[in-house]
Length: 594
Image 1: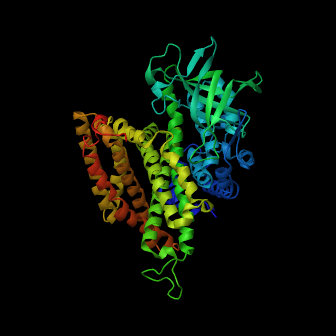
Image 2: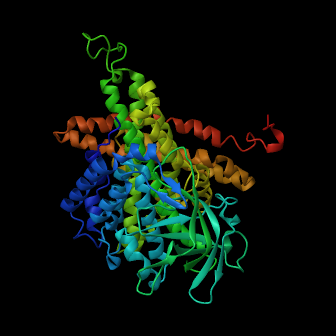
Image 3: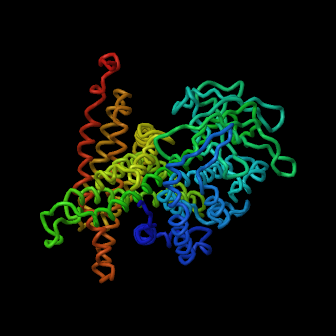
């Protein structure tokens, strides 16, 4: 009963009307290739693939899961056939480097296609998405020989890639990792250790898997300053680049999880495997952040994708399900009204919709910045985009994954008892999206990254890089309700940032205590700006006599709902974060056991 329809009209509203992707693409070297007709065709075909090929496998993947037998992992029924079709039709190489067989289109197109894939089936989407991160990491840090060996098959989709960070004793604290890398006297290293929670760590979709692995050299200093990065193939390569013998990379087990059952989460053992260094010795964390940041934004897309799919089911159900007589009857002759006639149901649906549309705009804005960083001809533009990405990435990852849990939970609530049943797919969306707030750095870690590393360390310069955009919007639309409300919001945002800076100077723990609330506060402010942009644009379209008046009025309704019912949450967050760290009692002051 859970069917996904790609929201192409809303995707194009975000891309073309609010964020002006057509002008953006004309500024890039790929302008001639990225024409509107081509983009429309790509989006249309991606929608068909997501709806007709991937979405039907979502429930299959959840119920069947991956199988582990005698060291081999098998994906759910239909996953491999869908993956082969994905590769054969060129989707895997869409935004990849033409030098190694890619199509060379902007990364943002990949990101937008990824949203549709994740809405259709998050567990399946993770297989190609992780490979794209491995490709970016190899391109950025691999030498020419490694790139020639690995990239063509990774880009074509014949091979896949993973990110291998976590160990049993070293979760988010990667400075504690123990995996060893022993030099072999040539360009290779012997990798010895075990990694856990490796998404897509082993499977039957591709001929080879290239693991991107953090490990320590024998003489490495302790902590994160002693970590290096390596590419470790599951199978070795022969001199003619054909697949050779196994590389002593073994899957020890797969995890039994709350959600994303169709994606294999593995224990991967490196039993004296051969690997190749990426980047410089003991600077592996810096290199790995290429992969981490790519994945953080992919996870933000997953959050929006799950909210979109949950909203679609909830909205459809609410318009058809008859229950009780509404205060204002939709059909006085019937015994009951559709539940969408009840104000509380509309509250839940509008909350979902506001987070989806605001989150989509935030994600697409970040995707634009990646395009600029990667290929804009002007250095000043690249530097500005890099600053914006540094500031917005933890917000996109942290905030959107938190509200995705809220929105998918509301999706269950709209359906009531039926939402609690598997047949409607709502409870799966909730289970699947729950991981998004954990992997690629928990929400607390995103909050620390935002507040400590980005805002306080830059003395609010990175905050100003985004706030200046909001200020420009307010000046251009000074007579609107949204400009006035945003002006007050931005002033408060800057004031809180300054207060936290002073508090942290006196007590460093204050930043840690306030980080989560600061991240959520920032997220509400960011979405307010993007929804305001959409509302003002919609008003112009209505005033010009658009034939889509109802469509544009809905954008105004969503923005007004957000500003009046959701944005006020920031005031409670302000009180919490400025209350100080003293109310977070030290462990020895509270009885935590039973």
